[in-house]
Length: 446
Image 1 (tube, one colour):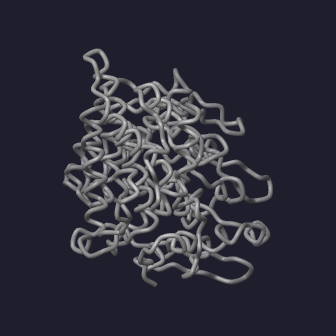
Image 2 (cartoon, rainbow, N blue to C red; image 1 turned 45 degrees about the vertical axis):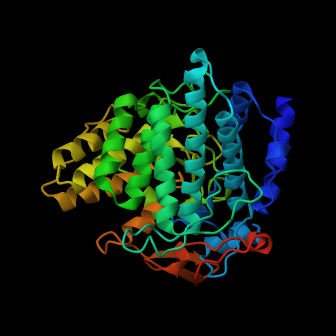
Image 3 (cartoon, rainbow, N blue to C red; image 1 turned 60 degrees about the vertical axis):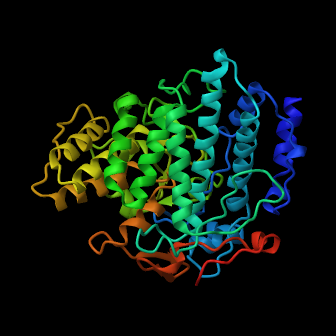
């Protein structure tokens, strides 16, 4: 029965995207059914990575670029009319459908006293799943968040149920982020205050409270709400703040960083592999690492022809889109720097860097004499620590709003240069044409 429930739920996603779902088609009815449905959503690919394809962490040779599908070629060159893969839109909504079905099922279950903790965990997990999917869609298909214009900017459709009668419209960006924050805040109140168990039970990837706080920290950082980003990063790290010592990893391994490692707080896998499988690490990125920084050898594979490929992913051979403690240390550091607490910002940076430094070399802690220098150090460390994690595009979008950190992206392909200036409309990708053929939604401006 459970297998049938999963298949029917997933097969109804096309109708869900066509605005024609029917909750009668889906039959999970127990806590065990809900748990299994949710477990199936945290393993395997499916989280959007179109933003990673457009980022500057890597470059493609002309032959590799030319061999790709148009849905990968076009966003790589920031084409104004780039039509990305339908799956970048549909896969998150498939997961949102599952989350909504679980939430509706749970609302019909009156748990016994001994079932309450499990019921809470399942609801918190469904809310976290839905929020992470909405967040990933917003990083690709909406403008960068600006509190001054969010009430006018287009958001994404917020599917909150499985009803055939639910009206589908984009709404505004303020509503999108309010929903994300609301779901994550409720999730944090429901999930257990336990340690992430992904390293022990690799087949059961159930979130804990630290993951909801970490997700809130990431979202608030994108919103520019640094006090709330700090509070949630701090809460997450107090729940779980383990860092790997990179000296314990074998740099000679093809993929030296193990999956389900100690830093992973929430496991999510990206849907596209173009940057990892075909991309070459940009020289600008690789040249940021000093020789005694272990990330220079752990993150990059020497191809013996003057080029390097990325191997430092937290999901070998794929793109890690989840949450890990290294990112949360960096969020807390950035918020401390922006609040003028230089000492706290540097403490977090140096805690992270010491775990990335060659133990046989002298480690020299970073120092800064003013807030601006401290902030530059944090942003630089984010660039070095988090490549190929679907975070660079979001960082470009938010940091471009400040002239001090704005950059113009450039690519060379077959002798021609392509550029993407700061705050360009192309930082918001177009909704795939296949979606608009099914649902009447306004397209993003060009």
